[in-house]
Image 1: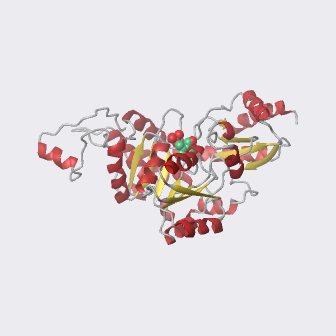
Image 2: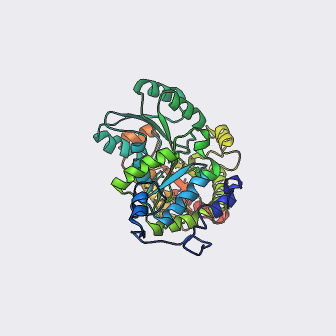
Image 3: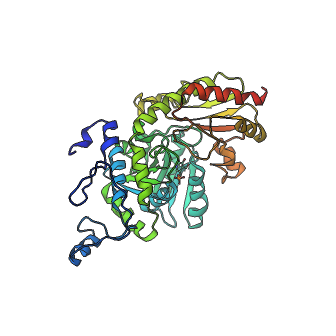
Length: 402
Ligand SMILES: Cc1ncc(COP(=O)(O)O)c(C=O)c1O
């Protein structure tokens, strides 16, 4: 299909990256190519492929056909020139920080409401390597501008929709600000997905995904991806040849298969999350619901504008009134359909207690600064009938006796 880019998102999700020729046949569905090595009749050809002067494959740590198919599809869906797949979302974030030029002595400005491992990667590992990170509230534009001005950072890192508080980042404004102060904008688009929002169209330099989540969507594969310009991709490719955080072909195949139903799944997940958020907001046991689709959400208008009214995502979080850790644990144990498993973006509805899982690596003081309380629960809406999920939450809330 030659002009796939002009087609609708759901058409691109089904066809992008497919129909790769294999000798004299063209499979409808991309095949898994597990081979690590690749043969050429002419050593000149092999030499040219090694030198990136000719397309082809030499060794699976450099590239392999099934992974290329996934990269082509993800780049297409994010409206990017090129993508590079990784073994996990964290491998992708690490690679983007290096690719953007972060080195010993560099500054990074980062939203403090980000996935816990991202926070710790910056404040522990990168800090040990001499990188200083200034943590800011993603919605405090004055504080972000002050941090950019003061530290002249290499990169500004944010999540489009934050984990776990569901803050929505004003990506067009942040891109302008970052570039004004000479920083590159790195956007983790895992929660929003390219179905709702494509940050490269609004000035982001790199888009990051934990493809483990919505892109793959079925809770059976760990994967990461970065979408960026062809030039940035070439730089990351050279680094990755040395550090080897590659995705394998079997995982790439599962992720590519999942990608085809991304629009169908995310539409349903948005509807389910909206219904659950509205209902939770009426419950006496719940002190607060964080969901951009609610009119009470501080960035409701911004999210409607950025996501063009297509939905507000499948993620929400809520706080149980005056709950202690033990109350939250009893509530989670009482759930029968919602799964208390440590992931998100799957077809199953999942619940998680950030303080003891995704944000466990933060100190109590750090969690308090970010706003992650003991009573906070994160919910990833699945594609089940939302009334069944609502009934499950309702029966589990009874254990709280509020
Ligand atoms: C927003 C976000 N980014 C990145 C990651 C890391 O992804 P992975 O677990 O695939 O390494 C996660 C994991 O939960 C996440 O929620």
